[in-house]
Amino acid sequence: MIKLLDVSYARLGTRDLDGATKFATDYLGLEISHPPEGRGVFQVGREREHTLCYFEGSPQDHVAAFEVGSRSDLEDAQPSLSASAMR
Figure (cartoon, rainbow, N blue to C red):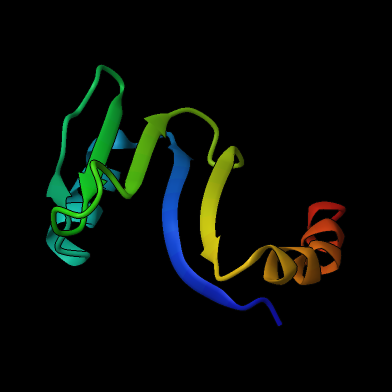
């Protein structure tokens, strides 16, 4: 198991940016941060500039950033992360 402290960021491709924006604001309760052209950028609270970014593109194109407690926690997570990347 990976010991996560926080999900720092997620960038998700979508073919329906308007629908993704509606989901993020109406269902998740996120606030629009600063929407650059072709993207929906959302934040939770004021701690971060943004937490979630939808962009017009392939739904298979995702990036996520996670916060762990220490370098050893990250090293412990490496086998699980590598295995899931191979799928």
